[in-house]
Amino acid sequence: MHQEDLFKKLTAHCKEYGFIFQSSEIYDGLSAVYDYGQYGAELKNNIVKYWWDAMVLLNDNIVGIDSAIFMHPSVWKASGHVDAFNDPLIDNKDSKKRYRADVLIEEYIDKLEEKISKEVKKAAKRYGDKFDETMFRQTNKRVLDNIELIDSVKKRFIEASEKGDLEGIRQIIIDCKIADPESGSRNWTDVRQFNLMFETRLGSVSEDASKIYLRPETAQGIFVNFMNVQKSGRMKLPFGIAQVGKAFRNEIVARQFIFRMREFEQMEMQFFVRPGNEHEWYEYWKEKRMKWYKALGFDENKFRFHDHVKLAHYAKAAADIEFAFPFGFKEVEGIHSRTDYDLGQHQKFCGRKLQYFDTELNKSYVPYVVETSIGLDRMFLTLLAAAWDEEKIEKDNGAQDQRIVLRLPPSLAPVKLAVFPLVRKDGLPEISQKIRDDLRFDISCQYEEKDSIGRRYRRQDAIGTPFCITVDHQTKEDETVTLRYRDTMKQERVPAGKLREILGEKVSMKKLLQTL
Ligand code: GAP
Image: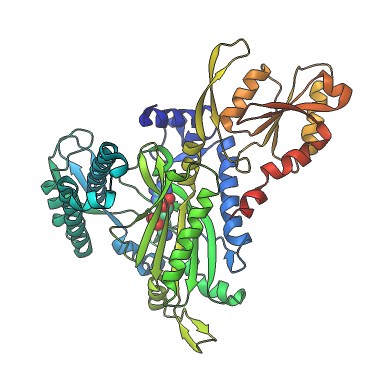
């Protein structure tokens, strides 16, 4: 299937099955803002639990907090967001569409990299076993020309970004003949900076009110609480502080469903280390975080690292974990070596010491920070895209059929077990409800009695329910039920009394966490 079609289907599926709705839809919606429906909210909670437990439960030296969205405006001056949390935007004069200039350049570089991969693949096919990829990359003229071009564009882009040279950024777009991806036009305006923070007012009377911001990242809530947590928890370096919460950005280009939203959620962890040890911890967290994704059991080739070309104003090193979305490999999480930039800045702006006394070194210093920052909504989209499957199946009468199945890891699925009475009579609903009532404290269950069993299976497949049981007349005789597996569609007869034992481990988060 064409990847664009897949993405359209996924988006429609999210609405149809109660995962995600456009915000304020009855008023025609609000751009790049979404609401999570009944299954979406469950799935989101499960992702948070998987992350929180992997960070806080499994690490003695990481604690979790929950800081406020509103913060003192000086926080954002100190962090650099008031002055530097900008995106360079450019408009196309013909199409009137607005783009991020840096994204246009990054996409141009991606295309050149794709051209190189195609050359390599073509040659590998042509030469078979005799193919030496390293030699080919070092000698093939077309590959070398493209590598040279990529290097020069990257160099110009970094130089222009570091100097804040907006004309220089525009010139790259002109020189590379980058066209509007929608209209093909190359009629561009100047590049302008656009601050992404939302402003609001604190206070009831407008003269007294002071300007505050909706936080564009949760990380600053962690930095300003560094001393509170360190002292109250008697934390010793290295240690981490984690939190999950909303963040807000007035994104210029907000497309691709929940990939880029104006209100979204982050799961961030700041790991405070002794200066000099940051590189070792940066590498440690890169590997550790990648393992968290791979433990989910999807195709490992769909995840990769991508080192940043342009570093954020606070970072010394930065890498993304990317996932192969239907619209290409894109960032899900950033791992950043943030040095002592944030604590140092807050120390300057608040006039108080934000330092740690290292008893081994017998001195105080501002710790360095390695950050892991994952977008909860992007992780949600990652899971849906990775789990989505349209499978051709055969009906009982031999006819061809198709089912949409979300192959979610059982521990993350919104509903773990669906309980069906075969018919709505003969006491079968009562037996089913009793089984559900007995299991619901340990396993998230759903009782369903409408429609045929086949249709009920399809609905559960579509929301990713890993197990269904059917209660029938035989249940009344021998207390067994039919257990049906989502992935294989196999069915087996099991004692109702053994369901907790059979399913408990399969759907528990513990099993997933133990693989980390
Ligand atoms: N504290 C560091 C920080 O905020 P970031 O790379 O700007 O770094 C981290 O954001 C993660 O937050 C991203 O990897 C992405 O998953 C998520 N994110 C950022 N902007 C987003 C948006 N507009 N919509 C949805 N998720 C977003």
